[in-house]
Length: 331
Ligand SMILES: *[C@@H]1O[C@H](CO)[C@@H](O)[C@H](O)[C@H]1NC(C)=O
Ligand SMILES: *[C@@H]1O[C@H](CO)[C@@H](O)[C@H](O)[C@H]1NC(C)=O
Image (tube, rainbow, N blue to C red; front, side, top):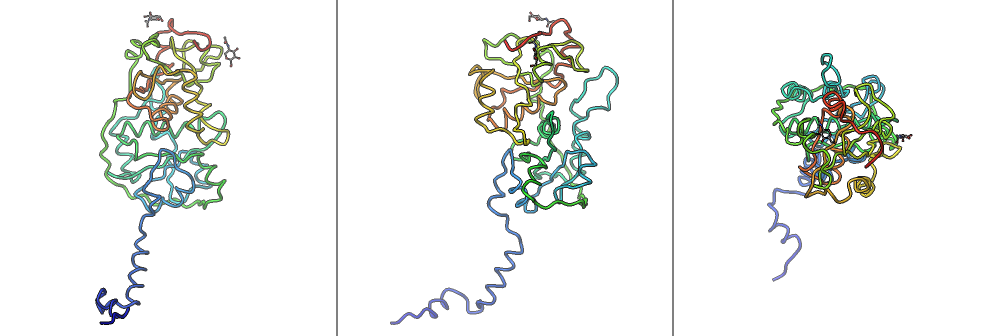
């Protein structure tokens, strides 16, 4: 018996499937825009290349945190403008209230739904870059706010290097504003990482028990030679070490490497707190730079539930314990 290729093919494929029909099917599959494999990897930091390749393939909202005027001039196609303020409120508070506290949970979830964040939507945050690093710090602050709303690892990422990194790679920009499709966002409130002033007061001067406080402000503020407007007394919370958040980023606004960031933390905390033991409480002036360290420790360096966030920060501490601020450099 002789086998011919044609006979073999006829045996395997129904006669009706011609080569022409096969090529039509291939085109159909193409047009269904199969998600590229690379887009299934959603890191804590994403590159401009990744974002450009994947943003239209995933259920994803790209939030531009720069000033509205900057967004109006030029932005990533499909990104929406949400300058910092609605997500992490600076103001809307009375005299004596703390600055930069988390928004009301219900306000936050309603807002997220209104910008198209649904049950499985991923979010990429896009910041500007400047010195001092306040624009860079906006993304980690918003990531912290989103964690409070129940959106954390695997759901929220930061464009490494912010908008300047996008334009540096000559990727497309636009002035067109996308139409938002509201979704229902339920969220689940996560307060597990937030600590109040009583919690902190019970943990100062316990470095020998592996409990560390990291103050993310600039050295001159930490050591008391400069007093920021929101603090009532100069200096820092007793036993806190200073790692200025400015040192988290390279001059171009990208995050330093994991090795460099870990070395920075180790230089002040040693091995007294690690991913699996000890505790690190982060704070700063009002809770902005503290979020940067929170993001670096938990998302980039892999520390977990042993990192706590004191949102009241030096503002609240200096109001409540004006006589208990330490002046001077690192212990
Ligand atoms: C505090 O830090 C600033 C900036 O690094 C420095 O110039 C100043 O000498 C320091 N002051 C004290 C008291 O250590
Ligand atoms: C102030 O600090 C000292 C030592 O740092 C501590 O023993 C004391 O309890 C603190 N007082 C308050 C009110 O926190």
